[in-house]
Length: 318
Image (cartoon, rainbow, N blue to C red; front, side, top):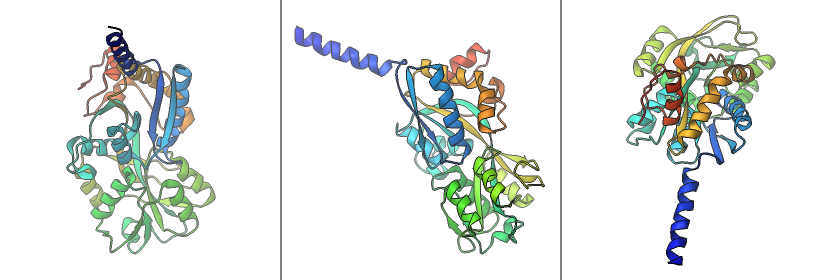
């Protein structure tokens, strides 16, 4: 009888620990240093740590969106940000996730629009996408959203691997290489104003390239996640002209392993501290419950849905 009671007690403890929403370490997948995912993740986890001392938060450097989705799917991280286009691919098993459907995570909120930015030195002879022919270019870290967007834009422009030399540098590496004349351009899909680009612009005059109309039409037709996006003049130091490009929404994701209570707390903190996040990140972050749920096609986490229900907003869940 004692042996049976011990077994039952052990099982009960396992269940209680597995279902607890009051303690634990939550791992947040960000991209590399210098990008806005990293800045946002550090700012938000700082806020969350003060909101609930029962949790500890750990920001993990990753390659970016594609890597974050894979890490969430494989239960290595609990929270992440990813681009809407890549999330759609993962849910459908297409594109970068061809034949490999990756789910087991849900949406908390749409955050901000990321702009696909193509950066060159202001003293270069590169003024358009066509001028990239024969040049040395960073297309972003492997498994990043930047890499996906860069490849699409180069393909839409007819710049095959025979016509350009590409490298998979993260943002910090790419900025350093451009500053030192070791590459001619780099792609960066991130929220504006992107920290690493502004830091580069202050020490080395830069120019951002616009996408031409033909390229824009091809890219926009390739995914419903893309929108026409304009980077206003003077977003960056020395940038005196507006830039035409594509934008894609970034989405805050939670593992389905996280409890409803935990994600409800996270969602509530996101909106209660949206101004703090805007000041801390330099992002054009206009967060409200309506915009955060608009045009999100994947299911929401039940914890996020319970928060939105309090605000009279109904969202789909699994």
